[in-house]
Image 1 (cartoon, helix red, strand yellow):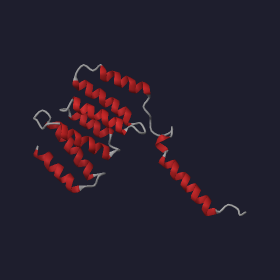
Image 2: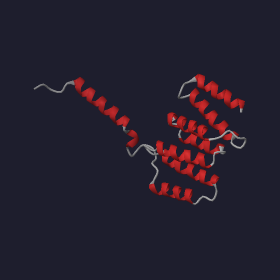
Image 3: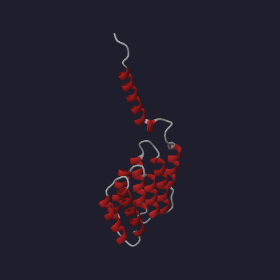
Image 4: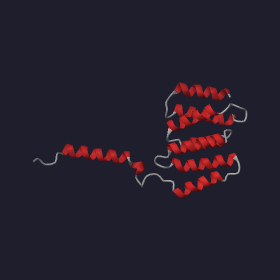
Length: 160
């Protein structure tokens, strides 16, 4: 029987490093995870909010906590969408969603397009619509790299 092969050991070590790199978000020393108590408290604030604006901000707080979790992007997206439906006229809610999902551009793009599709373009929601169009333009200029869509969204935003 032959001894250990150097290329085989190097390939096994490289494979192990790649696997550790891929699962690093699930390891405990990664990002700060939201505790269950904090999520429970945020959901209680959502239920006890007196008006739609306060409820939307409480939903954004819960979504911010969930966005920090390993697989929390879809849950955070759902909470941000609820917040946008609760207060569709608020540009602050749109800004919170953009900041919370900045590291997930496809999820953020889907959320912003859904918000545009659900809302109506009234004078009250003009600022929120501008914020959504501007965020979509920035996404297409940056991580999504589609300059034609970015220019079109910028033109629509300027037309508002």
